[in-house]
Image 1 (tube, rainbow, N blue to C red):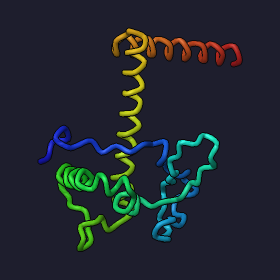
Image 2: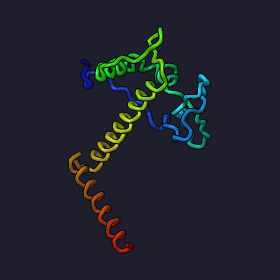
Image 3: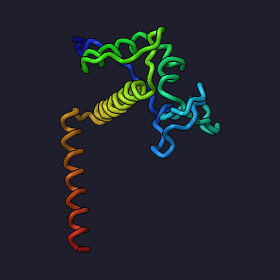
Image 4: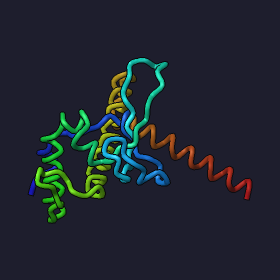
Length: 162
């Protein structure tokens, strides 16, 4: 069985790829026109004044036909094999070894998006730690204390209202 830590990182910039709201799932993909889009792709731009075009895209098109998918083709393939090994169940694939079903591709791309969000949060936390001179444990402890204080405030508000 493949070990997760042997896999190359497959990350996507979540500023440019997001999941569609649930009520919009299944609209036509801008690439293949099949009604299976669950993501929206925004074209990156350096111009902050530019109007951004948001295109619905299905996970199969994004995994295999986008510049990101082409760049990470080998890593995506290894990730899919690792998931197959982990689940002890192969995915159905086409003759060209692409995932056959959008639901399977949705799970793979959704996992990549979730891992990317976690990695982005970790990178932000590390940058804050470097800028403040605090270590990660200190930042986590401070954030936990702030969250607990906010929860206590909200509970006190509820008690006074109730």
